[in-house]
Length: 452
Image (cartoon, rainbow, N blue to C red; front, side):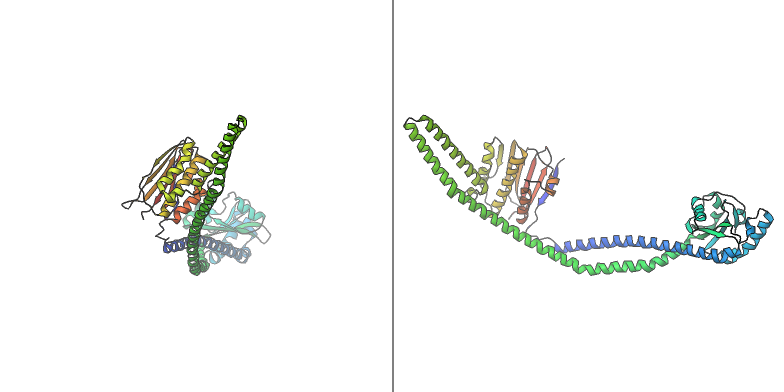
C-alpha cells in the first residue's frame, strides 16, 4: 500500500488563519456543550422518571395502609362463594369511591396461590394464575415494587382495553386475622410521563442554563488560549530560524577547522611519508619502503574521507559554483559505492541563497536516508525550476526498501529524526515536503518551493 503524507509546510506569506482557529475552537466548544446538554437532558429525564415512579410507589403505600387494609375482611378468602361474594360487595364501593380515579384505573387483590379474590372488573374474580417471581418476592420480603404492565399475559387480558401504557404497582397487605394478600394497582403511564416532565423542567432547565453560562464564561479563556498558541507559533518559527542559522554557522566553522587543521596536517604527513618511502627505496630497504607506501596510502585515503565529510557537512561548491555543482558533488560518494545515481538538474539555475540552501539540505537528507536505510540500487534526483506560477520542485526517488510513511511521520524511530528536521526546515521556508512510500515499494520525496 502506498501512502502519501505531507510532512510539513505552509505558505510563509500566509500566516495561519487565527479567526478560523478561534472559530474551530468555538465550534468544538459548542459541540461539547450540545453533547453534554443532550447527555444531561437524558440523565435528568431518567432521574425525573425514577422520581415519578417513586411517587407512584409512595401513593400506593399510603392507599394500602390507609384505605385498603381497613376495608379488608377475612371473608374475602372464605371457601364459601356466597360469603366471599358478600365481602367483595362490601369492599367494592370503597375501591370505586376512594381508589379508582383518572390515574388509577384497575385494582386487584391476590392470594399467595395466585387466585384473584377481588378486581374492580368482576370477570377476573376467582381466576387463578401463577404469580411471577417479582410478585412472590414482595410477599416473601414485604416491599413495594413497580413495573410496566405486560398486557399480553393471560391475567391481563381484560386490562388491554384500559388504553395506553400502564404502570403496575404491587405490595403485600394483611386481613384482620393476618392473612397475606397481594394488593395491586394499575395506573395510566401518562401520569408518570406528566410528572416526569414537571420534574425535568425543574432541574433540566437549571442544568442547561448552567452549561450555557459555563460556555459563555470560557469564551475569554478560549480566546486567550488561541492568542497563546499564536505567540507560541511565532516563537517556534523564530527559534527554528535561529537554529537553522546557528546550524549553518556551526557547519561552516567545523568545515573550516577540519580543512585548515586536520586535512592540511594529514596532507603534509602524506608528503613526508611518501618522501621517506622514496628515500628507503633509494637506499635499498624495500621492506621499509613498502610499509611507508602503505602508510602514505592510508593517510591519503583518510584525507579523501575527510574531504568527502567536508562536502557533506558544508559544501563549498554551493556558495562558489552554485546548486547544480553542489548536487553533483553530493551524489559522487554514492556513485563510488556502486549506486546508480541519475541526476537531472538544469546547468543554469539562478536561485536565492536561502532557496539553494533549502534544496541542498533536503536533497542531502534524502540521499543520506537512501544510503543508510533504503539499501537502494538506483536513486534519481530531479530538479524542475519554477516558472509561470509553478513552484520549484525537487524529487528524490529510490528503489530501496521503503517504509511505513504514516507510522514514521507520526513517531520517527531512532535514526529517522532527519524527517522531522526536513519538515521543519521546509515549513520555515514556506515550502511543502511530501513523501510517498511503503515497505518494499521504494520512496519518493517531493519538495515544492513556491516561486519567488
